[in-house]
Length: 424
Image (cartoon, rainbow, N blue to C red):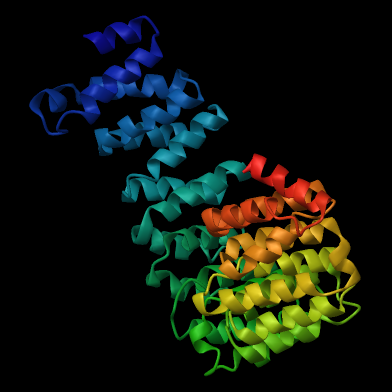
């Protein structure tokens, strides 16, 4: 009665609330529910047809709870080309929740015949959400070049081994977009049929396909020795397409080997390597996770005159997380700090070093960080204070107090220590 009163008053928010209480809060097989299901469906559909975006979003949960009785009217909305686009969008999305042959058939029909690309994309996603029950219908859609891409994208949403065979059937499709979508979907499966496809796609004429193949192999570091992946991926660092090169750097970093680190280093020191690829390679070297990869970063820092590259190297060294590498990373940063390279005079570099030392949390960095408090740049001093607090606040505070009371340090440095203590 309350729901009916809200309906008559066009109070959609209250109607949604009452319907949720009735349908979501009661057993769907309750006698009163069974008796009034048709009427409840009518009230629910009224909100779907008239409500705003948020109200429609909320009422779809009620529709799915009503069961298969909601499928025919939803299909009717979906097939009505004169209906509001957003309403058809919700109908397609809701039908995807039912995993029912009738719902599948209506969505497949829409994909075949409708001209609205946005609606078709939503319908394809809905099919993908249905899971394995939709695979047969999607496989049929692969046969039509007009629906092939949508079918591949739907299959990629299912993430079940049953999709491997239909996806393999289109990895050599004439359209690069379809090849790329199929290979990207296949990359998520640890199946023996997939690596040969990825390796072949490394030499595809389309950069988009090469890129997804490179990234896909990154998910299989366990195969880097059996398939000699490092050697096969190394040429992709020099691909004509920069996106492919950057992807190759990321993938090689996942191999976690010294030979991968060496290939990345060789690329990084080439003068003609674009700055974007250099930055990606610096990050990749830090992800390799070997001592040699950190040493390569130190070498590059020592040789570079680029503030951008040096700052990135210092930053990634502070993000090293493997326990056996945090101490070497801190030592490299301390060596850089003690060096006399011109780039060390740049405030941004010193601030980044302080931040990274604080992140690594090594106690041996306390004294060098205290020395940074004597820097003329305010940002450097503030970063040093933050790093000291992060390392061992109490120990650092005690050392600062001792220095503040000492007559053996210059007056201006003593004054800055006093300021640091005041800001502590």
